Amino acid sequence: MSRDWVALARRCAGPAIGLAVVVGIFAAIIPRFADYQAVWQAMIHLTGRDWAVIAICTVMNVASGGLPWMAGVPGLGYRRSMLLTQTSGLMTTALPMGEAVGFATQVAMLRRWRFPPAVVTAGFVVVTAWNQGANIAIPVFAVAALGTGDTGPAVLTISLIAIAVLVALMVTAVVAFRSDAQARRIGAFAGRVATRVLTVLQRPPRSEWGEKLARMRAETIGVVSGHWPFLTAATFANQLTLFGVMLACMHATGVTGVSFFEALAAWSFARLVGSVAITPGGLGIQELGLTGALIAFGGGTDAVVATALLFRVLTFVPTVVVGSACALIWRREERAARSVLDGVDQADVGEAVQG
Image 1 (cartoon, rainbow, N blue to C red):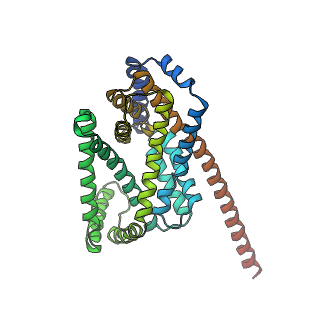
Image 2 (cartoon, helix red, strand yellow):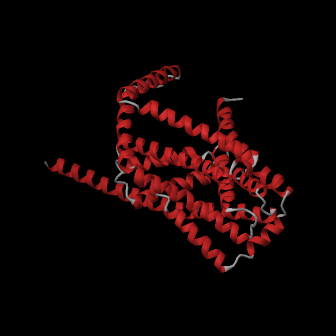
Image 3 (cartoon, helix red, strand yellow):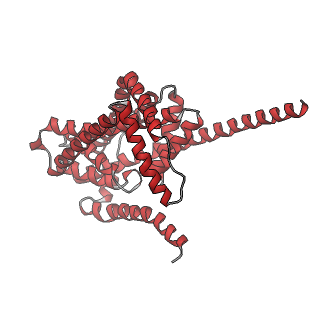
């Protein structure tokens, strides 16, 4: 087999496995405990009031999406923060291995807006850290509110793992950001390791990583010290408005027997499981986790599956629609900026010729 075919097979392996997982979950697993016909009936009988509540919750969630980035990248502004989050969210949700594409899109947009590399890196660090912290803190809080005796073994196990991950992240942050000298040493060591690997691959070495990490540390500390209240409030607002969308779906589809904190535990458990999935946006994995947790807490199977599917639609469709619109706006701005630059360059050339 030629190298081209091997490379193609490796690129396609991840998306193919993810697609197989999604098909297996929706075609083989979920139908074992729910009737899709009954699920459909539950979804089509939603009232106008149900749709109004769902719409309000969905709009609030979309509108709050850019707020953490406003806090993490000072000077970004609300409009650009929405272009950033919705465009990259479209890539992450709709494409196989979309996390990498979404990350690259965010870097390209921030650099195009002329934010320095240290500011971009610091923004990624604080926004990612706060998002992951919220993803971990919410299920821990929900389990604590319920009490360990009222949670299933799976939810309790995931929560204990989440606590361990949170502690590990905090220790790593303390070690890396304890001092400027420590950051320089860690960056220099990482640069040496990367250079050795890249030398074998015949790639250019990586230098000055110690200095770069020190600059990123200073920028990160500045952002956190000056904006942590806004960053924390914005992150939890964005996370909990998404939970509000799920609560609205539960109410609309008639899920009963599940308390507020049980619903919070089920939702946060599903998000934790889906965050490490190989499918785009955790498709299939989150639905399975959410369905299993809500049923374990006492929800009816058909109504719970209807909630999970409706919740997926209401998180996928707005992301695609709003993300597509933001991507078009971004591309239009890019073309306009390039036209201006081309015009300036041509004017400079004309002045030089005349001179």
